[in-house]
Every structure is written in C-alpha cells, then in structure tokens.
Image (tube, one colour):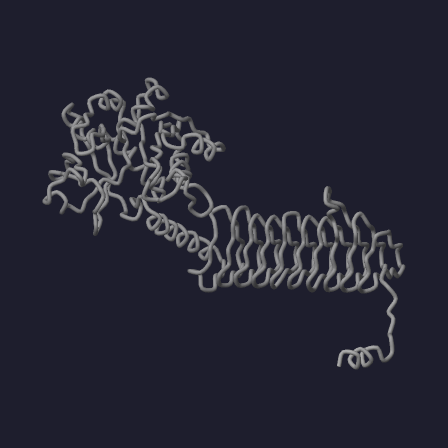
Length: 454
C-alpha cells in the first residue's frame, strides 16, 4: 500500500476564468479527477489533495472520491505545497507518490514505475520525457544515468535551455521526504520553494535519484485554453479508439464527442456529429443519427435515434425510435416499438408499446396506452400555473390533430378525440369526444366583403 499526494494546481490566470484551473472540464469531468483516478488505480493507503485557490470548489468537486485535503494558504511553490501534507502522513515510511493536478494524461502504469524505482533502492524517482519543444519545462541535468539536478526555465542559461529532456512533474520519494523538504530554499528568480530542488538535497545526503522515462504525451500540462483543448482532443481520440476496437461503428469518428461515463455495446452505429454525455448507455445494434445529442439516456438493443434528436434522461426500449428533430426530456420512456417523430417533445411520460406520435406534439406528465395514436399538434396541457397534472390516454385511443388535453384528464381505451378539440373532462372508453364550435358557412360573405371594400 502506498501514500499518494496530488498537487492541485492554482488558479491558472492564463485560462482567463474564475474557475480554478484544475476544475476545468475534460470530457465531462474536472481535470483534477483524472489525476485522482490514476492514483486511486494504484490502491493507495491514503490519497491527499493539496488545495489552495478555490479550495471549497475543489473539495465539492471531489466529494465522491476517498481523498483527504491539505490546505496551502500561501502560494509559495510546489515544495511548500507538498510540505502541507506532512501532518496527514504522520510517520508513514513511504514510498510517497506526488503528481500534479494539471497533468491529466498520466497513466497508472507510469506512476507505478516511479514507485518501483523507489522500492528498488532509489531515494527519489522522477518522471522525465524528451520534447521537441521543451519551452516552459524544467530541464534535467544528468551525468550518464545519474540525475544531477533540474533547472527551471526562468533560471536556466541558454545552454541549459537547449536540453530537451524535461521534468514531467511526477515523483516518488522514500521516507526521507519531509526532512528533505525542510532544506529546500527559495533563492531563485521567483522566490519560491521548488520541488525539483529535492534532487540536489537527496544527492547531498547520499541518496540515489532515478529517472523514469515516460511518453511525451503523458507530460502535457494544462495552463491555457489551447492546451486544455489539445489534451481533451487526445483523451477523446483514445476513447473513440477503445470503443471502435470493441465493435462500435463510428462514421467520421473525428466528429463524434463522447464521455468516459458512456457505455456502448458491439454493433452500435454512431453517425457524424453525435454527442454522448453522462450516464448514457446504448445497447447492441442501436443506431444514433447525425447530430443527435444524448445525455443520461438509455437505448435498449435495437432502439434508434434519428438525426438532430436531443434526449436527456430518457429511456428507449427495444424497437423504439425517436426523431428526426425529437426532444426527449427527463422521464421520457418509450416502450417497445413506440415512435416519436419530428418536432415531438416528451417529458416525464410513458409511451407504451406501439404508440405513435408522428409530428409536432407535446406530451408532458402523461401515460399513453399501448397502440394509441397521437395526432399532429396534440398538446397535453399539464401546467395550471402552479402545479403539474397527469394525463392518461388509454390503449388504442386516437387523439385527433390539434387537440388539447387539459390535465388532469383521462381518455379511455379505444376512445376517439375529434381534431381540434379541447378536452377538459374524462372521455369514456370507446366514446367519441368532440369539443369545438360547430362550423358555420355564410354563403356569399367573402364576395360581399370585397365589394364593400372596393
């Protein structure tokens, strides 16, 4: 078992945002969550997040993770931040793993390699990568395989800046860590206590410093909106590849957005521009049409969502379909073979087997029985200005076009509602309800009107 410390980075003024940098979302979850989850994958004895700017917001964002928090009240550098975790670690003998909250691409396997370096005799192990453009990173000084030090770019000479091996900001330490931290000084351009200064301190105490070479992509940090977009693009490409290898068909995959919380079965087809968010689950053989947006939505095997449909908190059973241009709001349930067509909105309603609502309807707070037909322009008027009310439509019922069902109201099994009706009372089973003014034709009226005006 290991102790782990995640260093939550500060505000990040280059993000031009009031939101703490590490809380900016990547594929639907905070950037910091990726660092936390990578550490948790190693089964740590204790996981500590050091918080500074936006501490309360960070704590709230991580409320579902088994973490403890240490507070860095003054932003005096990375070594100072780590020192704040000492009271929570007690006399833990190590190894202690330290990562940054703004490097979300670090994998558990890489972090595990750092821990292995300490277990195999190093007092300190750090992650290094070689970059084509090392601008902004601390450069690694070495003599053969021996790591001699790390120089921050702002303190580096032109010769040192030419070095392409850089410090990726992840470390493992033995139990000497907190004693060594007390020896870190702030004699540098920023007047801060730098974590990489521990390299020289460990060496001065006769402890070996090992370097673990990583993949350059993993070291990508986020300090700007552009870097955030770049990292998100990498995560998204990785996620698409995972699902395609598992049998999902993506047409023009680079146009598809999905989050790690989404679950997909084999033989799902996703057309261009699809957006899948939250706890969306899509079963075998389902098809999601172009530019559809699904959030926290379940598609059972064989269900279909057509182009430009938006579904949030909906559930489609086998053979059900929605769209194009349908809107399924939370609580919308389409049972087997139910159909919701273009410009139909469904909210907190159950449409039972075989229900058809083909065009331009609103079904809110309703239960629609098996085989019922909902005509174009039908509205369940569910809100009286203060409360929502239920509408019940029986199996096999036929609701004529442009009708309004004023809830609470019930339409019985196999009943008919005439087009253009406003229904305010119960319609018995197998009855015809017509609630509209009788048509009158005034012969010659139009010709007479034209003569008067002309």
